[in-house]
Each structure stands twice: as structure tokens, then as C-alpha cells.
Length: 207
Image (cartoon, rainbow, N blue to C red; front, side, top):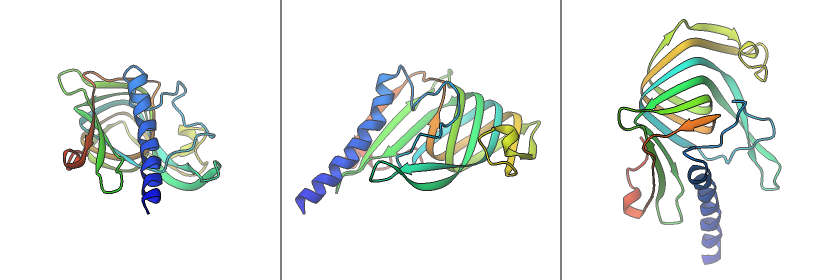
């Protein structure tokens, strides 16, 4: 029984470490940066979701359409396929940004939190691409076009599927559950990273 728990704990901590490394090693990058701003076909995701919250997101060049992500199977090959809502933003400013992810050990709550842009200077991202399960907030779109063919917004999207885009988007009280995010650059002003363990982990998720 103890060996099984140790194996479970080791697996979760390996995932946890994989999330921390890009954050601490890449000069203020929350997640993996990709200069193309698109998800490559050979990338697989962990299967674990994470939360992103912000008081306000101000974005230029917004696109949204359906997509999929693939998890890695136990044999190292592609595993389960998950439908997601894809969003692209050419440039974004996020005020009071929060990111959280659960990395519990057996019987021990663990939450990794990252905060930035809490003052007058927001966090800033370029070529932001998000694969999400859900999004909540109060949104305002400028010059929105609804019902476009998704493949006209991104050539990797399925032709004939639904898409929409706008020149600008503002989302207040942003609450987002994501599976994958990329950005060519992510500038985090006032970056704070904390590993919350045990009682300190309770209530530390962004929402």
C-alpha cells in the first residue's frame, strides 16, 4: 500500500516540477512560449487543467474557434483527445493576473500559485493562444464578426466549423479553466510564485 502511495506521489510531483521549471527558468514566462503562436501537431498535454483569473483582460486581435488537444498515453504515444475552445489574442494586458494548479499528494493538499500585474502595470502577452474548457466574465467586443469559417481564422482549424473574431476584446472578472497556453512573450510584472502546502493550500486557487 505504501509503495502505491509513494508511486502516486512521485508521479504527481514530477508533473508539479514540470510546471515549475518553465516558470522559474524562462525570465518571467508562465508557460511554454512559441514564436508561431499556434499549437504544434506533435505537442501533447498533461491532461491536468489549471486556472487563470484576472480583474481585467484587454486584448487586440481576438479570434475564437473549436479545436482539440491530445493527452500523452501511458506508452508515450498520443492518448485521449479532448475538445476545447481555442482563443487567439495578438496582444493582451492582464491586470491582477493569477494562475493556480493543483498538485496534491496523497492526503496532502498542494497548490502552486503565480501572481503578477497587481499594480498599475499589467502582465503583457504577445501571440497568446489558449486551449480552454471554460471561460467566465463580462466581455465587450469591438467590431465582432460571428459565424466565420474557422479555417479562415487559423488554417489548422477544421474547415466549415464555427468561428468568430473581433478587433478588440475586454473581459472583466476573468475566470478561465485551461489545458494549454502558449505565448511568444509573456512579461510578468511583480512576479510572485508560491507553493502552498497543507492548510496553506486551502482556498489558494484563483477561484
